[in-house]
Image (tube, rainbow over all chains, first blue to last red; front, top):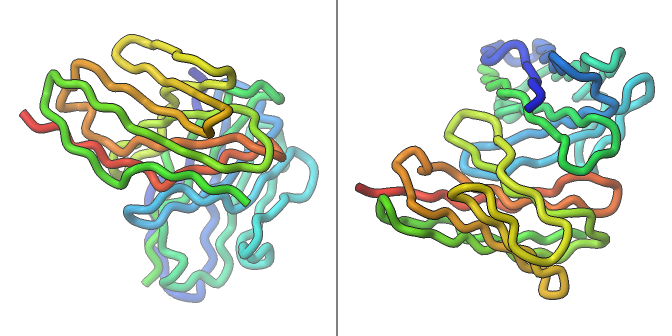
Length: 116
Length: 109
């Protein structure tokens, strides 16, 4: 299957700083990328959907000014957690989809964020 | 709104069969997915059902009944490496995936 990478895989930062997470589709062009958050022992919660070249669509309850998403190209989307706080500590996973085909949604390996 | 229910945890013996049920209520339906997720890792795709019936892939099978809002994932000939969380996800209106809480399966020797 297709490969999606994320960088960094793990990050520790101080409260109040900003953290950028990159998501890349390595061998295909992703028209749509999704960002999920997963707290321990819980399921994935969709944060936002981003389409290349347009503004991201955020889910209810997700602050767009805190979680900045940029999808500048068909192979790269970034999530920036601004002014991170300890409650933002979580596992962030991106997913990429090729076109509108139903099956082709691939997940990245995830980024574990710990805010001290 | 969306509601997807699956058991929290199941335990089974190596070599046995386990069936993980998933019931859902969604506005619109564009398919149901099953993913496997090992601790600390991202989900990996297992199966996709959009029509009623059984889809078989090796040791894993998935069943869907759209009229009942019901699916199950069947794992046969369990191996220790099958210990993981199994996530049921529905693609509904807007083509977004909504995940259930996941079922942790523990395979014992």
